[in-house]
Length: 263
Image (cartoon, rainbow, N blue to C red; front, top):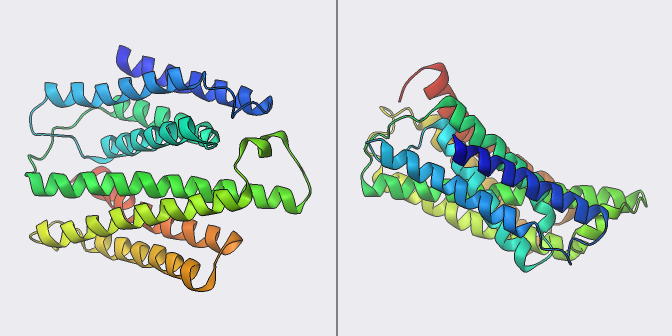
């Protein structure tokens, strides 16, 4: 598919331009990566819309499509943040990931939607947006850990200058978690309101893991507000909570759809 090829190549070109700018310590000055990044986003979104128009049953929310949509959300947020500030370095991770997930979805093929009504569609879109936002937070946590580790060892690599100052990166991490936590809360509330039969839909394990992740993110935000949590503690809680969330949604979807072959 030409659209997919253009999107993947544009993502990779944007990544290459970011890497080159970071190596030259000119990441804050060069915005040439924005062109291919925007092109990749448009082609990525267009592919999902094109597939949806061609097939009945509404949007495809199955495993590979959902992964691709989360990758699209991550790439879009990275592009917006990078265009306005010093977070363009996120694109080095987010853009290749979006390219891989889109190519994987195209390779596996589209599956017709389940004909969800607007309430379940709202729940699903909130979930995907929450996962994309919190995945960005996980990337920020990894960047924060790498930055702290390099500074402790007094290894002042050129890529450190591509990142925001430590305190700014930490503040951004918690702001992102707060937004993702709000979206995850809305996701859980709409799930409680709109899911009719929890047991019949094989959603018990997904719900339990999602609630555990929600509690972990909530505890992290409370710890930050009450006790000033930061550094390695913040990184550990973020990654643990994100791991629970990945198991809740994509782990359960993979088992149900790919292993058990259920819709």
